[in-house]
Image (cartoon, rainbow, N blue to C red; front, side, top):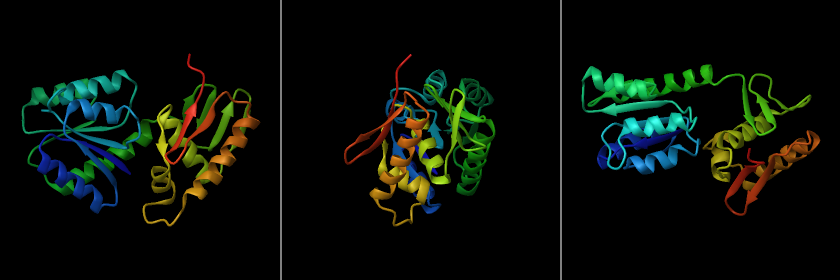
Length: 225
């Protein structure tokens, strides 16, 4: 699981990062609302832990802009305030959960796990990019009336690429998310599965293509509406 932490208290941000790493989650921390928004807009995270009081943009504005951009990543908001109006404001702006500081790390982790389960429930049955639809229950990739079923790892790679849309997905992220952090999988394993997916896109006559950014990763290229 990949977690974005947006927290301007550096020590707390470092502590939260360590808590996530101890759970074998991938974690990145930034200290401003502007950076938090930029990172979150990539759509590459499973959960965002977002402080309310941030320099640049506050947490309420960050989550409002994320929802306006149709980024549905679950957001857990953190604040030192314990007022009902702050909680209501956060939820009204599109946050999924709310915790006040100080908090217990075990409760934090439990809420993060609950949010990822909830995301799976509300994510819907398909993901769509341009002329492609990926059925999350059957692992079928469709274009119009044509469809083809993906193998498990093909499905996971394609899901990551579709979730990121135009964003570049680094090879190391694909390896960590599909094969696991402890895997000894190498770059050429990813290349093999990308090759399989390209052939299936060709079979479907899709306008979507998987492009390579040399020594970095892959992204989906498709006609813009």
